[in-house]
Length: 180
Image 1 (cartoon, rainbow, N blue to C red):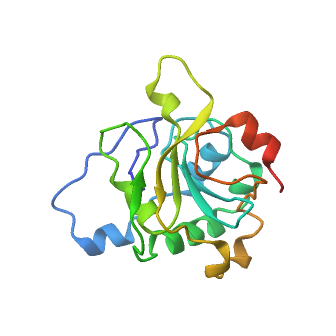
Image 2 (tube, helix red, strand yellow; image 1 turned 45 degrees about the vertical axis):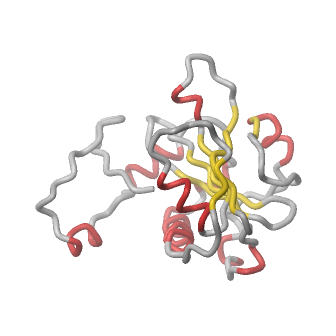
């Protein structure tokens, strides 16, 4: 998911219809300064990270830079950007099964699930009482596994868990189930 933010916390930049596609392709969406703020969880920032379950299935966690996040995820900005680009460029190969009752704009989560990833979101940012969990919004009809991709290069920034994806995941379960 790509959102442009200015340097002030939680301020979205207005998109201009005057930008052409080449200008957008050359824009830096995630700067070193942003990365430091993500690592320190200094302010809200639309940040997706990826994990692998005990079956080798891949999930995306949209965190808004809050909640549980394994430290390994933010080891390298360069590797993170490369991994994100690979996963975003995957072809849509399956159907997304809607799990959530949410009816807002969910295009990004649908797209990830159509590529074979489980799609989770930190819905606590919309709740008055936090549940301290990632809610599953969509799951793929046919999950993509790590064995189908050449991602060994990223093994030190993709956390592995000792449980299966497919349900809401509490921070406690994720912390206790973290293998690396």
